[in-house]
Amino acid sequence: MNPTVPLGNTPSRPEKATEVSGLTSLFAKPWVRAFMALIVILLIGMIFNANGTFFRWSAHRDMLRQTSVFGILATAMTLVVITGGIDLGVGSIVAAVAVIYSTFLMALPVPFSAASTILFCLAVGAVFGVWNGFLIGKFKFQAFIATLAMMTFARGFAKYISGGRKVMNAIFFPDGTFKYNPVFPEITDWLNSRILGNNIAIVTIIMLCCMFIGWVVLSRLVWGRYIYSIGGNEEAARLSGVPILATKMLTYGLSGFFCAVAGICQAAQEYQGDPEAGTGYELTAIGMVVIGGTSLAGGRGSIGLTLIGVLTMGYLVKILSLNAVAESTRLMVTGAIIVIAVLFQSSRRK
Image (cartoon, rainbow, N blue to C red; front, side, top):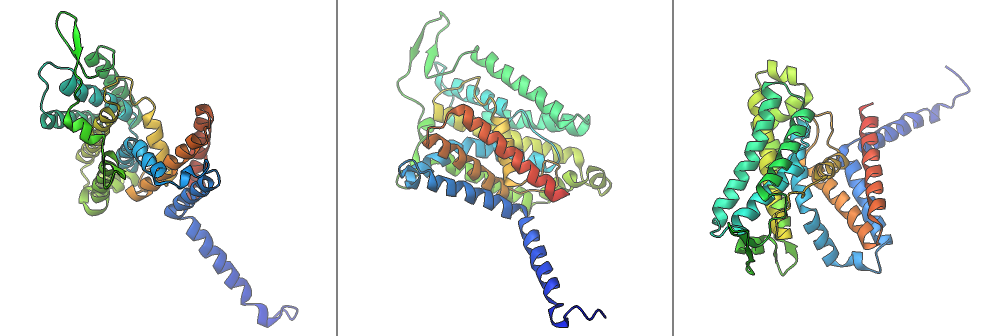
């Protein structure tokens, strides 16, 4: 025994080491880091509150409405990222569905019914997604390549249907003439409205419903366990009897379905179908997923984390907008935050 070390002080070091270890393990949890990022952004908003505008409910309500389409796409992206894949076609599918929706309801002499139009749009989005999953699962395409091809195809599809122009509330006739219809479809007005005393937008409710569906799939269905197992180790999942092809087709199909929902909401908010809509939306969706803490390597993540990422990026953009920060600066700040989020993930894996 070393007589120079007081016996009464020996337990103190293990206790301190245990406290530090517990604190480190706490901060290593994705949901803790995600909440911390959100809290930091909210504190920044309280400091730079644009003369109190940040403290008004209208600012938060508008932030949720403006972020809803991106939140729906982030939900779709979460599903495919957990499988270890990526979906670069989400923005182009939004444009294609927005054009189809607007064409069927606003640009035909005899418009389709709202129900049939919405069902067709959802089917188109799901088919696009299932095709991605088929290429990736059956022919072993890299998700990046398969969805990059879909990004190009769906964008071209949107431009082909619209003739390269925005589809608005105008009816074109064979002789080249057209007339504007002053009345918009009721479903469009409803989707662009607010409820609960004009305090929350319908599209925000739709985003939360999509997130709830995604949560049920990942947390309550066998399909969700298949998704996690494929992302963790696809070969081990295959040897365990997981239906790889069917799971990927269903996952990418649900992603396309959510993209169609986002496209319908986009068209309703803008009262038009723009073939250029959705450009860059896939990058924003990926950023929200990463900021939330879902691993791009696959096998880890949740819809709850994505919701935190959606709120974090949504508030960041809103705070910068309230303070009249230039768009160029906003883009650079957003990019820097995504890099920081990825660095946190890398340090956790190490």
